[in-house]
Length: 252
Image (cartoon, rainbow, N blue to C red; front, side):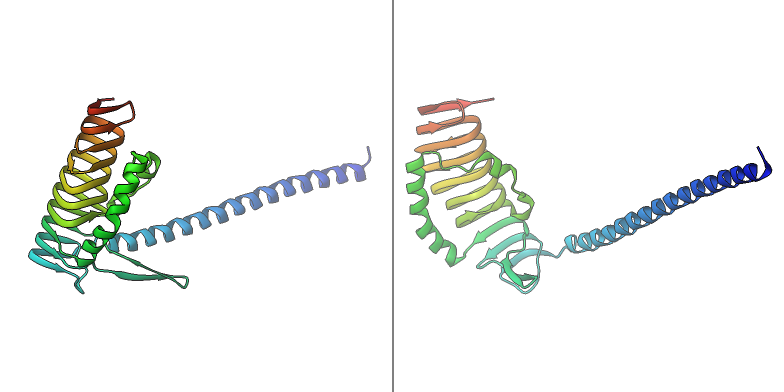
């Protein structure tokens, strides 16, 4: 082997080592760039979450007596709430505007004096009663209830009185003409009917109780529940296990 051949072999070896080193450097640079991008994304997400949390926990408390509607964005009421009409906010996103009612929490008494609620009760109630009798099982699907974020509902901790109770969390006593799509813990007494997402306690109505999930007692002419842990007392009672007149039960 002559000198020229040895020299070429050494050069090729050096070139291979340099190429390998350059490849490692490129991979390292790519890794650092990717890590930098992820870090910047994480920091931006944390900043957004911090802004959301600062808005979410901007609490405005009122005491003794308060009224709705009002210009003040009230989140907590400790006392009596005279609810003549809900506060509505207009939110626009990408040219699409929607109206929503900011959720609030009441610790005391909620008096629902909304005249539109009374009108809605008079117009919606016959439809719900008829559909309830036609289908016998007027409750929502379990999958639908499991997907609901109840923290977005108004929360009444104490006593709720009104013509209609709709999409509320009531922890205590609810007295109304009819109750629709609510989450109750305690006692719910309605003149005509109740239609709960979740009921933990005792629900009483003259015509029908339809509870998707019920842990407790249903008292009415017709009682239905798709997931019952308790007792049903009425003319006709339906749960996930059986259908019986007068008294029905399920504890599993």
